[in-house]
Image 1 (cartoon, rainbow, N blue to C red):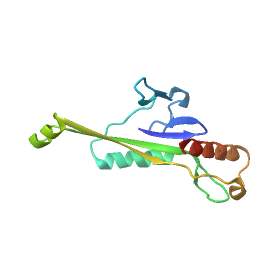
Image 2 (cartoon, helix red, strand yellow; image 1 turned 90 degrees about the vertical axis):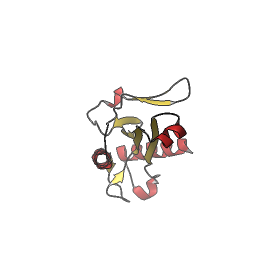
Image 3 (cartoon, one colour; image 1 turned 120 degrees about the vertical axis):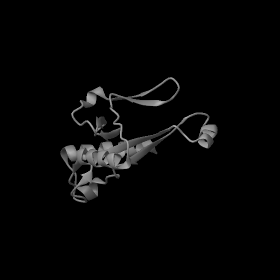
Image 4 (spheres, one colour; image 1 turned 120 degrees about the horizontal axis):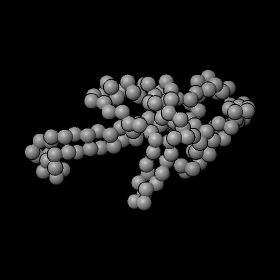
Length: 139
């Protein structure tokens, strides 16, 4: 999955035609965070995964400011789940079965914005407020 958070709305960058209103972030009773409405894409090798990363990056929201002509206007999360099946005998004993998995979240946060430097106005100024609010929420 490759998600973008822009102006407090979550978009599926691998399926940009998906209505953002159909995507929601929820917390399950056990504390796990779930993104409902975003679709995962299965790949079988690193080249396919990199192609999806590039595809999603092209769909990201960008815009010009006085500081950066192609400024990222959003936060993005690219999630990779690696699964291995039919492990060797040694690995099977170590992992207690024939299956192992790992999950990685690659996160790109939009940089904090100082209006004094960016000279943003209108919707670009509102974006900067949302960017800064998101960063503040993360600590």
